[in-house]
Amino acid sequence: MTSSLDDLVSLALFARVVDAGSFTAAARAAGVSKSAVSTRVARLEDRLGARLLHRTTRRLALSEAGAALYQHAARMVAAADDAAEVAEGASREPRGQLRISAPITLAQMHLAPLLAEFLRAHPSVQVDLEATDRIVDLIAERFDLAIRIARLRDSSLVARRLATDRLVIVGSSAYLAKAGTPRSVADLARHNCLHYARTPPSAEWGFRELGGVRQAVAAGNLVVSDGTVLRESAAAGLGLAVLPRFMVAADLASGRLVTVLDDLPRREIGIFAVYPHRRNVPAKVRAFVELLAARFARAPWRTPESSGTAGAPPGRPT
Image (cartoon, rainbow, N blue to C red; front, side, top):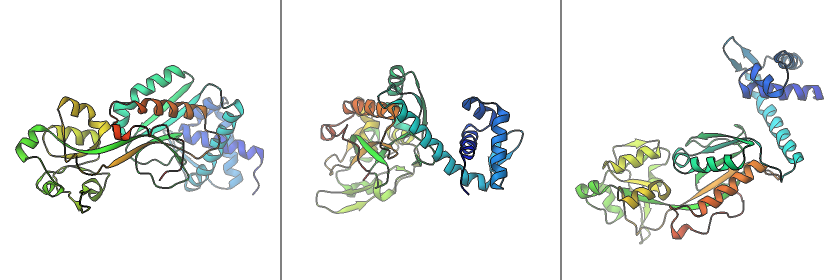
């Protein structure tokens, strides 16, 4: 079936209804009446011969056919939004909604002041930040940008390295006074090694000593899915934890936490800004990534070994 211009308008309004969660909100955003939106969606359902939305007095729910159609309609709307922004001129003032996904602890500790600075500089932008440790689907969930801390796998996304950080083993002085300070990887077997649930134990507690022998240690009585809880548990004297320096730099400086086994080969991790692969990056995305790169380049938690990597040109994730 060949789509007409009328169909494209109806598809766009259908996607807006799903995104907004109601006909009223979609109509307000589109600048048309609620009845016009409702008529368009009903006409689209008649043309396709399938119900797209289940309506109740309290909520809307996608039907199976509606869910399948929404993926295509949402991509069409996103492409239209991108085209409009390009048409307005890439050098114009950043504007519109900027949807960002970022790890919870990084967002809490280091993004909040940057968001304030960014919004003061660009008052026409509205930021929608989802602080989550899950890996979001940028395309399907319509995020403009994600910040990820990892070794990224190859994909169609563009990734810009903002900084390189280092994982360190930390514990409290009280815990080490009681349990002893480990001098080798083998010594970790006698310690309470706390575990971050989103990382396989073999990766979290797997180390290569100077001799090249890899040993995995994963014995501990706490498993958590939140990095802040892991850090606080280590500071409370429960055991040892593997954490990035950006999370514990202030604790190390104050003596609240101390590092152990610093002579192990470095375990570096990248902090990346990741965004969909597009020839014309929206001004709002470009401006925020530039701010991140500039601020992370002189972040106090960066170590001398990791300096000089922020602001590298965009490339494909590895």
